[in-house]
Length: 206
Image (cartoon, rainbow, N blue to C red; front, side, top):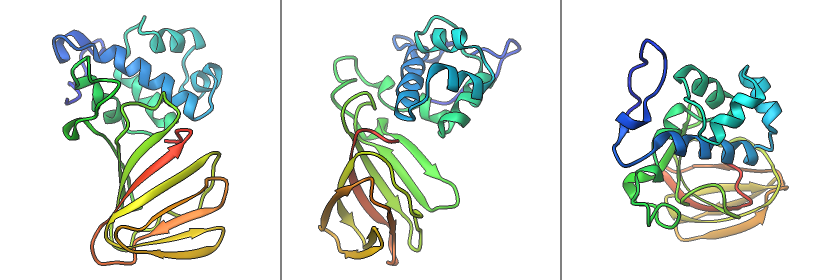
């Protein structure tokens, strides 16, 4: 679903976007999910975005219209592009929305400059785990980082170098792995074709 041009009142009309679907409600839910995953309070997110706590609470509960400018500020703080909120399972049939993710409905995020693109395979980020498909370009490197939780994965295409606490593991297609996310970890693609990795992360850390 494309983001519609900003109107004179700078308001996004959910009713015109897709009859029978309430995108505004989906946006509010996703903002709340991402805020909780980032461990931000209502006050912290509101202050960072330059809006009031009451207004942010109304947005998350779908009780207020959401101007594109405000959504852009919230997206920047939460670390996602605005398109994140306009893709995904909000387009799915109601009976599938919290269970199934059709390929065409995956939410996507590209890390500019890193050569890494990720697709969310789990229906949402509200559950106990997150399922991701990462596509890592040849020569791309994630950089080293750590966070709470645990993760596991399987390399379904290409080659992958995986470092865990400084120790290098060289993976081939079909190899799988698991480790504590509190360990310093990093991955890179040493091959000549894109590497594809399916990740399971708990709790969600997107």
